[in-house]
Length: 172
Image (cartoon, rainbow, N blue to C red; front, top):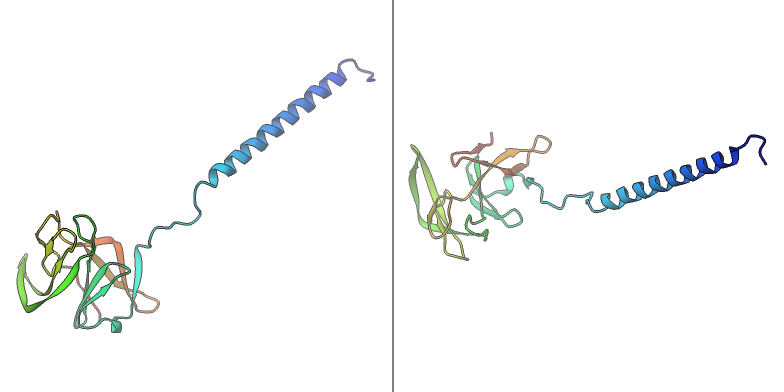
């Protein structure tokens, strides 16, 4: 027995409140950990900046990169990249070489066209510069920014950075 009246009750109330607080804290921490487990630590989205390889691996003309769904054109030391994703429903368009290359006027600049693009899904047709010509495609094929990687000089595309159709990368 305690010498002071009420000391046992005070100790019992204190321990009850301490235990209740510790239990609530433990449940809160566990609930937070459970909620955090619903958010992945890794992003499964494709990277937007992709190294395509050294410029020497790109032949004169056109090269299709199926993993990126991208056409890379080379004319000497000048490169540009055109998306292979149809703007209608996202099918992969096919390049068809033209029997006779054409030169078209694109806002005052002469553009040499060696291919045209055809969508196998719904028949959309695009000129070699990506402009939609016919079919259900609502807009032209996207062009993406190309650059050279500073560490190893490989050609790099930024699939999140669409550029105007007059963009060209000239490698010196």
